[in-house]
Image (cartoon, rainbow, N blue to C red; front, side):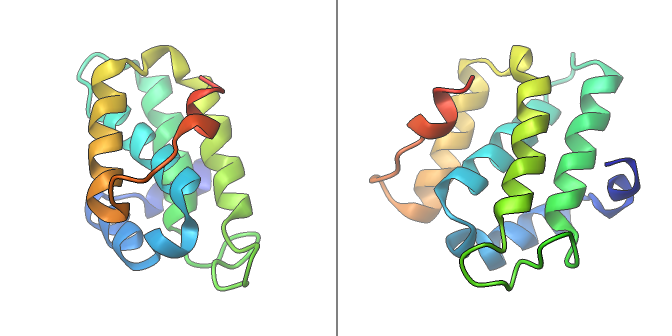
Amino acid sequence: MTNTEKHYSEEKFWDKLKKYGVKAGHSVVYTALLLYFVLQKPDIPVKAKMVIIGALGYFILPTDFIPDIAVGIGFTDDLGALGLALLQVAMYIDDEVKVNAKAKLRDWFGEDVDTSEVDDKL
């Protein structure tokens, strides 16, 4: 993931979510948002920040292992990269991070979102 770090920026992150959020689905978007909000915490170790930036950079990358335009499977590799990063930084995910991620998720998808698939892995 180290080569993907150069692709991360907040602006690119929000642009990607706005453009592909609905297509990517709840799990991908929620996982990305959890990582984003963990990254905003000031007390996160540099190693954890690098893991997050690498995963979010991969998510932003327009031409990754499975192109995002591939119908039905385009975001599976993104979810894998985001999920691995999430497991590595899970100890830094607190209630505030979850609340912020869920609030943003509801802004885009409405009140009827199910985050249990991701939450059960934390």
